[in-house]
Image (tube, rainbow over all chains, first blue to last red; front, top):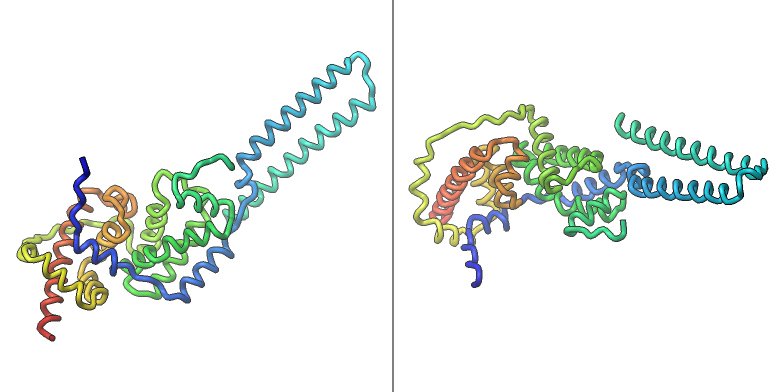
Length: 113
Length: 194
């Protein structure tokens, strides 16, 4: 069964057609310009989901690295192997910490504006 | 994410704007600019202040775009910002008091609405409509604008204006009758002039 079409409301049609007030073209351009130029994009916010994925990837990589390390039989410890791996892990942690700090700084500067 | 499906075009451009893409920002500004301006004019009453209100509101909305939780439509959220900014501009507190009036004087205009409005369609529609709308109270102008022009539901208007839905319904009915009466009066005058 076909639904009954709604009766046209002439006042509504009139308001829809002529009720809106359009701003001047000059204002429209100024508004667009103001919005586009003032929009401050935050990379830390954009990459929030990818950041989570990235952390998982890093954890997997670390787990694989530890697995390889175990496979190498830790009883035969070679200093040249431990030191670079350890340095790499520390470097990663520092990098993550710095990125977080930059993200927080950007967020705070946006708030203060 | 690439596999995320967008419910509609608005969501697509909203996500685009959140990523800082120009096309998203442009779409949102172009889509809601005219209605935002109409709402601002209805409240502040002049074009200069309305431009200021619209610009401030859009800048505010895009500054806090990441805080928009999508519990309501983006337009509802934006129009609420416009409403509050406009009220601040004219120095009115957010508590809108409802004034109950006897609307019996408008009942006589109900019967001949169809043909009168049809005649108005042949006249200078925008001009007379503007004059008729100006006769309404500011809140009523806004409710009429939001409901009939911006297609907002009573619930959405409640969210924008912070008024009770029963009050909105009553004002909508009353202001509609008043508007119809005003249009008929204007139309009668116009025909007399001819």
